[in-house]
Image (cartoon, rainbow, N blue to C red; front, side, top):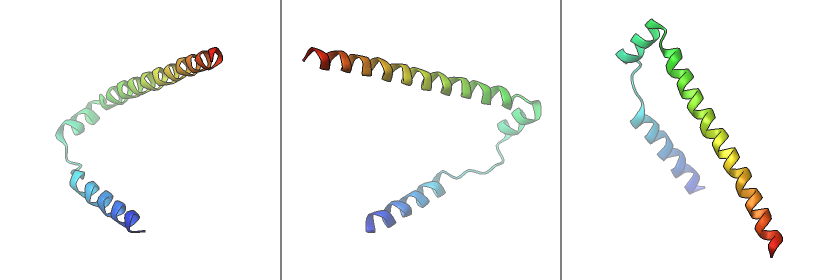
Length: 72
């Protein structure tokens, strides 16, 4: 129980340390110009690429594990 309370306390403290104001000039300019959608699209493409890569890597590892276990 003490570990859970300590973890929650650390989480709240960390969130307070990294909290930021919403007055970011660069983000406001990107939103005003409509370029924020380009940034979001690039981030989504990168994330999807990483996810696809991880799934393909997992598939290859399962195949190699299956191959090595059948030899033994």
